[in-house]
Length: 154
Image 1 (tube, rainbow, N blue to C red):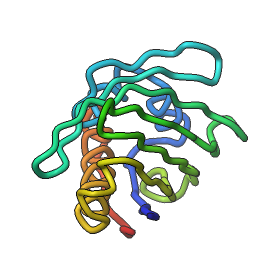
Image 2 (image 1 turned 45 degrees about the vertical axis):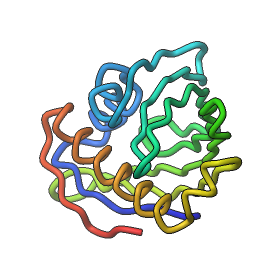
Image 3 (image 1 turned 180 degrees about the vertical axis):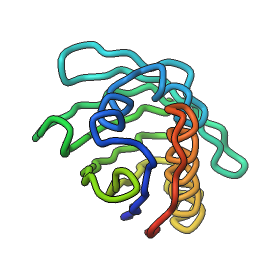
Protein backbone atom coordinates (compact mmCIF):
# COMPACT_ATOMS: atom_id res chain seq x y z
CA UNK A 1 0.00 0.00 0.00
CA UNK A 2 1.25 3.47 -0.89
CA UNK A 3 0.25 6.77 0.66
CA UNK A 4 1.44 10.32 0.52
CA UNK A 5 0.76 13.94 -0.05
CA UNK A 6 2.09 17.42 -0.46
CA UNK A 7 1.48 20.07 2.16
CA UNK A 8 2.35 23.77 2.39
CA UNK A 9 3.36 24.86 5.88
CA UNK A 10 3.44 28.60 6.59
CA UNK A 11 6.89 28.43 8.19
CA UNK A 12 10.54 28.56 7.08
CA UNK A 13 12.17 25.27 6.09
CA UNK A 14 14.60 25.27 9.07
CA UNK A 15 11.66 25.59 11.48
CA UNK A 16 9.77 22.73 9.81
CA UNK A 17 12.93 20.58 9.92
CA UNK A 18 13.42 21.32 13.61
CA UNK A 19 9.80 20.36 14.32
CA UNK A 20 10.18 17.08 12.39
CA UNK A 21 12.97 16.19 14.80
CA UNK A 22 11.33 17.40 18.02
CA UNK A 23 9.77 14.52 19.99
CA UNK A 24 7.36 16.84 21.80
CA UNK A 25 5.98 18.14 18.49
CA UNK A 26 5.85 14.60 17.09
CA UNK A 27 4.07 13.24 20.18
CA UNK A 28 1.43 15.95 19.83
CA UNK A 29 1.08 15.23 16.11
CA UNK A 30 0.92 11.42 16.04
CA UNK A 31 -2.63 10.22 16.71
CA UNK A 32 -2.62 7.71 19.55
CA UNK A 33 1.04 8.37 20.45
CA UNK A 34 1.75 7.12 23.93
CA UNK A 35 5.55 7.48 23.82
CA UNK A 36 8.26 8.64 21.42
CA UNK A 37 11.92 9.15 22.27
CA UNK A 38 15.29 9.30 20.59
CA UNK A 39 17.32 6.15 21.31
CA UNK A 40 20.29 7.13 19.15
CA UNK A 41 21.35 9.81 16.66
CA UNK A 42 19.09 8.34 13.94
CA UNK A 43 16.70 6.06 15.84
CA UNK A 44 13.46 6.55 17.73
CA UNK A 45 11.34 4.21 19.86
CA UNK A 46 7.60 4.71 20.01
CA UNK A 47 4.32 3.28 21.22
CA UNK A 48 1.07 4.07 19.41
CA UNK A 49 -2.53 3.03 19.93
CA UNK A 50 -4.33 2.67 16.57
CA UNK A 51 -8.02 2.37 15.77
CA UNK A 52 -8.66 -0.03 12.87
CA UNK A 53 -12.42 -0.33 12.88
CA UNK A 54 -13.28 -3.02 15.42
CA UNK A 55 -9.61 -3.47 16.38
CA UNK A 56 -7.63 -1.14 18.67
CA UNK A 57 -4.09 -2.53 18.74
CA UNK A 58 -1.19 -0.89 20.54
CA UNK A 59 1.99 -0.99 18.51
CA UNK A 60 5.47 -0.62 19.89
CA UNK A 61 8.19 -0.10 17.39
CA UNK A 62 11.35 1.50 16.19
CA UNK A 63 12.00 4.13 13.54
CA UNK A 64 15.29 4.66 11.72
CA UNK A 65 16.21 7.75 9.72
CA UNK A 66 18.62 7.43 6.80
CA UNK A 67 19.81 9.39 3.76
CA UNK A 68 19.60 12.51 5.91
CA UNK A 69 20.12 15.81 4.11
CA UNK A 70 19.66 18.36 6.94
CA UNK A 71 16.72 20.74 6.40
CA UNK A 72 16.03 19.05 3.03
CA UNK A 73 15.07 15.37 3.24
CA UNK A 74 15.36 11.96 4.86
CA UNK A 75 14.10 8.42 4.63
CA UNK A 76 12.25 6.90 7.54
CA UNK A 77 11.72 3.17 8.06
CA UNK A 78 9.83 1.52 10.86
CA UNK A 79 8.34 -1.68 12.14
CA UNK A 80 5.61 -1.96 14.73
CA UNK A 81 4.60 -4.94 16.78
CA UNK A 82 0.93 -5.37 17.64
CA UNK A 83 1.12 -8.53 19.74
CA UNK A 84 -1.23 -11.25 18.52
CA UNK A 85 -2.49 -9.00 15.73
CA UNK A 86 0.79 -9.20 13.86
CA UNK A 87 3.30 -6.73 12.52
CA UNK A 88 3.01 -3.46 10.66
CA UNK A 89 5.88 -2.04 8.65
CA UNK A 90 6.47 1.03 6.59
CA UNK A 91 8.93 3.37 5.00
CA UNK A 92 8.63 7.00 3.98
CA UNK A 93 10.52 9.67 2.12
CA UNK A 94 10.09 13.25 3.34
CA UNK A 95 11.38 16.27 1.42
CA UNK A 96 11.20 19.99 2.18
CA UNK A 97 11.33 22.80 -0.38
CA UNK A 98 11.21 26.42 0.75
CA UNK A 99 9.18 28.70 -1.44
CA UNK A 100 6.79 31.59 -1.47
CA UNK A 101 4.37 31.32 1.41
CA UNK A 102 6.37 28.79 3.40
CA UNK A 103 7.73 25.28 3.06
CA UNK A 104 6.35 22.57 0.81
CA UNK A 105 6.59 19.18 2.47
CA UNK A 106 6.32 16.11 0.23
CA UNK A 107 5.59 12.78 1.83
CA UNK A 108 5.57 9.39 0.10
CA UNK A 109 5.13 6.24 2.14
CA UNK A 110 4.51 2.56 1.68
CA UNK A 111 3.44 0.12 4.31
CA UNK A 112 1.86 -3.18 5.04
CA UNK A 113 0.85 -5.57 7.73
CA UNK A 114 0.86 -9.26 8.50
CA UNK A 115 -1.17 -11.66 10.60
CA UNK A 116 -4.65 -10.71 11.72
CA UNK A 117 -4.19 -7.11 10.65
CA UNK A 118 -4.42 -8.20 7.03
CA UNK A 119 -7.70 -9.99 7.81
CA UNK A 120 -9.27 -6.62 8.61
CA UNK A 121 -9.11 -5.91 4.90
CA UNK A 122 -6.91 -3.97 2.58
CA UNK A 123 -9.49 -1.21 2.04
CA UNK A 124 -10.02 -0.53 5.75
CA UNK A 125 -6.27 -0.42 6.34
CA UNK A 126 -5.80 1.90 3.37
CA UNK A 127 -8.42 4.37 4.55
CA UNK A 128 -7.08 4.25 8.09
CA UNK A 129 -3.53 4.88 6.94
CA UNK A 130 -4.49 7.93 4.83
CA UNK A 131 -6.56 9.28 7.73
CA UNK A 132 -3.57 8.82 10.04
CA UNK A 133 -1.30 10.67 7.59
CA UNK A 134 -3.76 13.54 7.12
CA UNK A 135 -4.34 13.75 10.86
CA UNK A 136 -0.60 13.72 11.52
CA UNK A 137 0.10 16.69 9.27
CA UNK A 138 -2.85 18.72 10.60
CA UNK A 139 -1.69 18.10 14.18
CA UNK A 140 1.95 18.64 13.23
CA UNK A 141 1.15 22.11 11.84
CA UNK A 142 -0.90 22.96 14.92
CA UNK A 143 1.84 21.72 17.27
CA UNK A 144 4.44 23.91 15.57
CA UNK A 145 2.05 26.87 15.35
CA UNK A 146 1.89 27.06 11.56
CA UNK A 147 -0.99 27.11 9.10
CA UNK A 148 -1.18 24.22 6.65
CA UNK A 149 -2.64 23.82 3.19
CA UNK A 150 -3.09 20.43 1.59
CA UNK A 151 -1.71 20.57 -1.94
CA UNK A 152 -2.23 16.90 -2.87
CA UNK A 153 -3.19 13.58 -1.24
CA UNK A 154 -2.45 10.00 -2.06
